[in-house]
Image 1 (cartoon, each protein chain N blue to C red):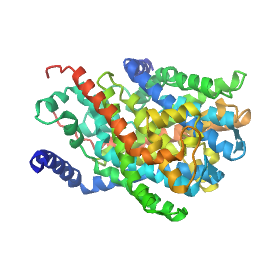
Image 2 (cartoon, rainbow over the protein chains, first blue to last red):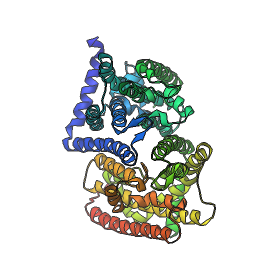
Image 3 (cartoon, helix red, strand yellow):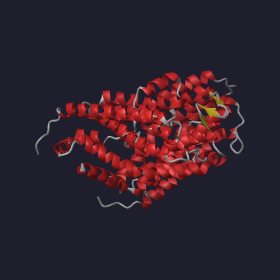
Image 4 (cartoon, chains in turn yellow, blue):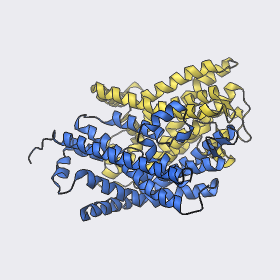
Length: 267
Length: 264
């Protein structure tokens, strides 16, 4: 196993060293990434400056929801977010180089450009999580503690699958990178707000097709003891692992089909 | 003048070449519009039916118009000029018998003119079908709106131009670009309308050119600002456009003096 992972460790270590080589640039990048986190937080705070309850959540609940989605999305963005540069590799023909190496293409692509700077955004979300946990009154039980710990993890796993789904679609599109943003960044946007404010078709879309609601909203309902709207009851909050398995199956099948569809230009 | 018209035409042609990119952009704008309209209507509902003068329908209209305009106005980033400064290609621009700032502005207006319909119409169409739109019935707001959108493109260009010039002094621009993105997206009214801001944030926004990129044109098109108010907003946009373009020229002159072209 250790032998199997050695090439990836070497790849990752080289990426990390490269990013840390220019300290000041890296610091600026971290601040920039944190700025994006603050921007998203500002949106929530501005909205709650004029109202007290959105969906069934007050500000404390909305911040808890926001932090779960934020930690999950920024972690996924750091680890696999750069697969959205696939259109460039396809256009310039550099994907062919990946195909020649004796490692799976997706694994190579993921380890090719881990973006440490995204930690700036994760940091903002972690601070919000700590604040939100102290603001809410939660009837802690061992099961709820496990849920609170595992929610950001499965949130990241689900968002990572969405990135891979979006990348898989690129094999069929030309210059269609932005199309995929609708599901990745759009999924994050939808996940950062109570899904209950959406109309039923949209709620079903963001729960059962793009499983954004599993990343934050449904687990938050369980933690705060809400019952949830019709068709998407709070009990679904326990099923994020099932949603993650489902979306990863779709992502990997889509990726495999896309890679088989790809024809190199002989570059 | 005819050279600038050619630049504008080239801007149009360059962006119209990638039809699927325009379609992908419009699709994404529309999906974000669905989410944004739902959040806006949810917040207005929670506030008891009206929030800062927006009811559910006008709030949704605001969200859809914002999604329709962000493509043409381009409130996001643009680093083409910075790339050219870094690679030294800027020397080619300096050698051309046309003012670089005017040339790039003309090309950007051509881009915006092309993107107005393919990027603007789909979100509005989806909006009309899903939530309905509250738009004025007379022609004047649309005419003034078109002027305002054009001015918004100029203000947006002038800001992006200035941000790109930082490449004369900095090697790595990503941090600067990201911070610009954060400031512009929040303060232009894309995230939530500027009218919803708490007073201190509204004051900050009023001192920046960002509301002139999105909030002003939308206020004029929706008829929220009509009569003299509309002309005050247009005047504000003109002032920002001229002021920022002039500062952009001065900074460009200073930066260009630093450029050393290697023969080859």
